[in-house]
Length: 318
Image 1 (spheres, one colour):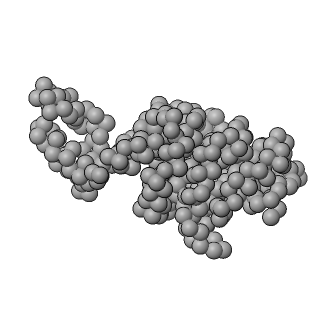
Image 2 (cartoon, one colour; image 1 turned 30 degrees about the horizontal axis):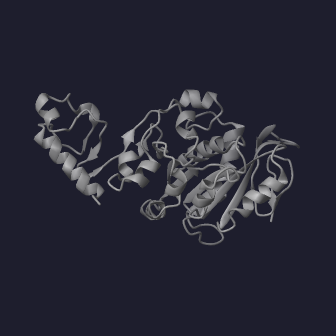
């Protein structure tokens, strides 16, 4: 298995042989001239979207641009946007997750920085919640966030953010020559990176249950221990992928659509992930009642057995 450092060194050597300057700390693709006939004969295109950290000798992340104006207009949390009900609600939602992830909770949570966002059924708002949660966490001063599109059937994250499909999670699992830095996407948001689903594969479920996935999750949890990693996963009652992922997570957030999802469906979903140490629920589109209520918004609770209440801060009783 070729390491990331070896691949970076090989690529640097190809750059040098092609006559491309590599002085300085970083060589970016926009700084590399169009390939000559000689360069093309070397089977290497300097115009490829490559960023290489010369000092560390490893590939750095590629970059994408997210239209924050369009995202804010669609109701998402974005950096530097005016204060809103949604922003405040996600500040409340993220706080216990962040405490568990950083070891400041009531007890130490293994892989607490690995957080899966899911739902019982489709259409409950899990992708919307995953993106908002990641955005809100990225606004923290001392933490970085990686958002992983692990919904291998729908691949909603990239589409919602207005970005084209790109190599990602499934490609990592299929090819041991591909390293995480090769597919990780930096964004124009500070402290916020993306890992796309990657190319569709009929064996996606088996890939997520493979030893390669276990090794990748362990590597991500330990190598990036200071980074909060959010996984947008498939619904728990629709496919088996989410259950497989949940077995490796430190925390699982289940999104429940108020006045739509049946209590029996929530209980069934919770029963499929009993092994996960921390299971939380977000009540989406809850009708707020009382003074200072914002109207429809998000609720939050520790969910183990049943969901109770209709307020924007409804709590799930243990």
